[in-house]
Length: 328
Ligand SMILES: Nc1ncnc2c1ncn2[C@@H]1O[C@H](COP(=O)(O)OP(=O)(O)OP(=O)(O)O)[C@@H](O)[C@H]1O
Ligand code: SF4
Ligand SMILES: [Mg+2]
Image (tube, rainbow, N blue to C red):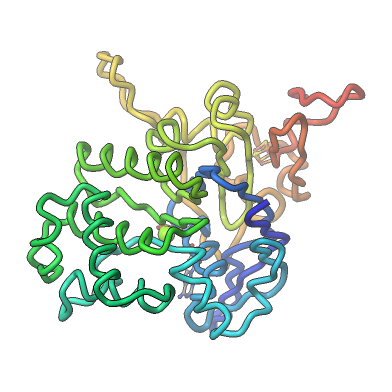
């Protein structure tokens, strides 16, 4: 087991109340595994990854739980200990690449700095490694482009530079937060293929955050669906797409455009909106939008149940004596 997140709770204490952005989330990532985390805006995907990286901004605080990386609790480490792991054993690609590239430094200096912080090699070797990484992520004429400043590159190129930087110290775990959202479809596909190849080549594990289920189908081994800070479903990619259980997941899957569908039927949309985190519905958090909502759903909170590796948080399913999930 590479990463084990246990009962993670992350809160933002605001004047108007407390937002529980991550609410008792547990999951694991194995070596070399690609785990996708999906969910609408505000479901807690970025806050989960920032909690793991120890990069929460005030007033964000971890209110409970453990984050075990190779059995060591990251949450108990001080910033100095964390810095040794960040950018080295665990790397992150952030949702907004421009915020993590410094506009006043050349690309090569930024990547080299990361390498020199974590590896005991000479400047010359660090530069060679930088150019090699830029080449690996598909930047043409990498030795020359290494001299560019971020603004001299296109959005797609900058995203590749971010990936090159994140991969420059051979991380064992890469956290990629919406790595392809801002890019056009061709470049999206290239970046995904790149992540996939990196996993094959270096046995790197990837936590891939996205709201795009097409990306999930293409790249992931396993999927976690989050809604309002909670995991509502978890399964391997095949069973999630073949047999989605939670009404929210079903809604997400139905809202993917079908290329072969030439009818002018409008795209399905999950009704309603994600609730205000300060005014969550009682009972199941999806109850105010769910087409299957029952009386019980507005009174009790469903638990996440696991049967044969497929987990779901919904009262529609109950365990039978044989231990199989069935619709009530
Ligand atoms: N700095 C902050 N202060 C207060 N609340 C915050 C802050 N950052 C995040 N939150 C709250 O935490 C919740 C989860 O946010 P998060 O950024 O993790 O969502 P997300 O799933 O990454 O969404 P997106 O798809 O838009 O990136 C939201 O309800 C958000 O309002
Ligand atoms: S528990 Fe009830 S409201 Fe929640 S998703 Fe299941 S059926 Fe819908
Ligand atoms: Mg986010």
